[in-house]
Length: 266
Ligand code: 2HA
Ligand code: ZN
Image (cartoon, rainbow, N blue to C red; front, side):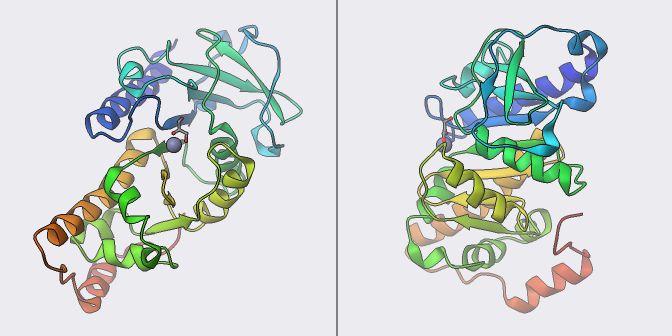
């Protein structure tokens, strides 16, 4: 493996360790995919398939010939942190844009949330985005907050989280999209996530977890971490017995203006 690709995989391993340490990755919870097409060399392109063609479950026209590193289904983040190539695999999307083969290192089946992840990558490519990584994880405080229907209205949680600490607004300026509860691993979940990821860098799946996109896996992790930090501050204040006041609308507007924060991606 060339050093540029190895560097991307090492970032995945580092993030997998953080997910485990934070308690966001019980058992096989969460998954990671990275579009590594730009890092694939001729040697890797020449690798023969380790699997039969496998169906994605949907057709994604922009992924023809793309390569992805994917966490393996049923694999643990804490193991991936130490052995990324035994707990994940590299796949090549076939010319029909509806199937793929595993090419390295071992025939580890990719993540159960592959339809969601690949639909997102397809959209990112189509929209000319520089984003290459997608992260699904189970951040405790954000998932806890998603059990209150009052938080699930459009941008309700976004505004509450932004108001907890200035950094949240600065580093998660697009806020948090919401997807109502949908069966894990389903194409319906993939479609609902895709609609939200057009407007938000991080999406909260009700009573389940988050999906984040970023330029690399570290970026996707940071976005999730910043939002979950705000959720933790909210819950700590509540557990001390009071409702946190939150920054005022004027204070938040000032930050948006002074730091020229983006209101949409690109
Ligand atoms: O990969 O978290 O949603 C395990 C999951 C599925
Ligand atoms: Zn999950």
